[in-house]
Image 1 (cartoon, rainbow, N blue to C red):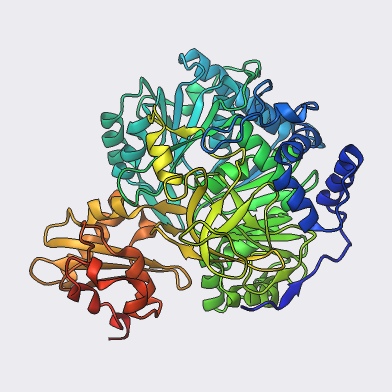
Image 2: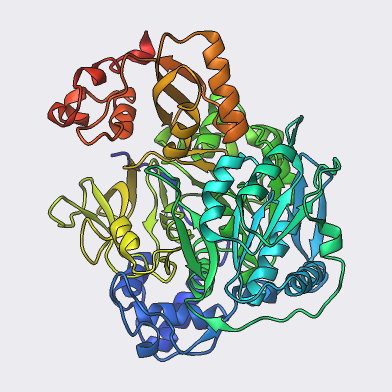
Length: 637
């Protein structure tokens, strides 16, 4: 395992985490010689730690330790049962930010750049708050947005949260089927749609898809955001809905009151609707933004995302610690996005590992085309960043910014392995286990060990673990999804090796989520579309993360020709997402499946990455062992 140190804390920037540790020492008498000492405290005394974050970050007053986490069972942990808060109120408090300061700077392929002050954002939230109340939206109702990553969507999320309604969003790149699969489960009271968008130079109308989605859902009200302004209107126009000014008020809600509905990838069926809480999101994001990303007043946080990825919700929380944000709706051009980082004044830029490797492969040298000296942090997530990606960042992007490779998930709406401003960066490694995250590496018998690959588990509760899954009244699906493998322990689905100096290496996911350019798509949705094309008997999709190469293997009914390839690509583009149009469509005699009928997505991916057949699967578990043989060396033919 490589352990070359690429970055060390310089001491030039006073870190929030140091101030927090000093404050905690004054409160508890505990002394912290280094990050590992603080991490141990955070996992051995979780109630003391999370109570300190709550108070230090201004979410509320001091809370007795026995009332922070009175029940620590998983699932079923109880957090801050006596406290009330509202995520939107915490965000719009924006400590250290004046009313006239810019809180959001917006870029788009569809319209011109603009910015909103904190006062303007509050005013827009108040208008939408009034519109939602006038529409009859009340606490617990679902507010759904099929909208782009723009300030208006941000204001809508804040307005819904202020009422105590539950906000959920889909990216405009999602086709009608993907939107319906998600939103029909949660029965939104009101649906906001966008008429279309531009991606690079291409204009995409959503008129036909809107008609399908509206017909399939039971929303009482529909509002159209005129982004393209091409005349498409379902229900009423945005500017009419949000025309009345009003008073901004926040409903105080319990810690576990639902805030967001996020969606799993849909790998094994319909996407799971994951319920996240006001308290869990506010507390966890305050910790990550303030202590790990070292953000505060004067910082500007930009993480490239769409509204269909949890990183959008993560971005949305940054003003809780006084940082402003950057939104961008458009194509992630390998050169243009770095110029946008410079123009926006971002001090922390986050993106995906495939974007960084794509920039490297195209020979882009960001520091030669943009002034990136304001950056103190660069984040990477969505897939493991290879060691060569670390080299690329420090050679071609910035020698002084801290690279934080982050691993987490939609399930917790955060990262639990990443970086901290007081921890060195080593080549190919995630620098540390995050504060409050008791991450361990389990073998098949549930034994933790350092220095060997195992199943990534979390053995103590975290506040942003889901309240549950929507519609799962008895909690059965929630328990099956995360706690079946090791009872009472969260099993995440990643392979992890934890080093003796506290860093980690993530080997990859044990599921098969497809994440391209911030648009996450599950394979079950993918297959439903591909296999609806006449001439396709069966299919299997694989995303090679390091190459950002998406491959669809098809079992054709009578041969694969160019016309069938075009039909497959067109169907994926229109019904799912343009970003998931495959790089290759390859015919195989038979799609390999297990004896129980499951497709061998992960074993095929490992084969394509060079692993021998005997290491990836037991042939005795296959319905047709010969079906897998064809994949060995198939990309070299």
